[in-house]
Length: 113
Image (tube, rainbow, N blue to C red; front, side, top):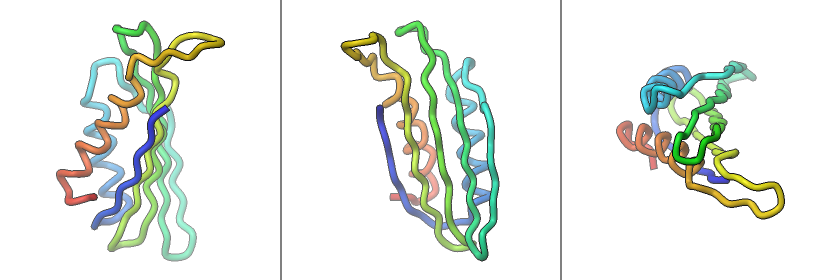
């Protein structure tokens, strides 16, 4: 499992759209499984779940991304999972780390840290 938390400027809708486009363009086998959008008071929330097939490990990895914020500041959390093999001894090929790295790469373009 791999995780990432970053903060930056913007609004939830534009950051979510940019992230979704960048993640989906990261590989032919990448797909957006589902999205949930909510607004609670002044806070907007977008949760996206992606899946991607990795040939090197012959399995799928999942990526869950939450984008939370107002019209000025946004917090993005990403969790990659499922990129390993084995029932008792989990061995990871690094697929989940690669998937989370796509989020970091995308957010750095917008000044997130």
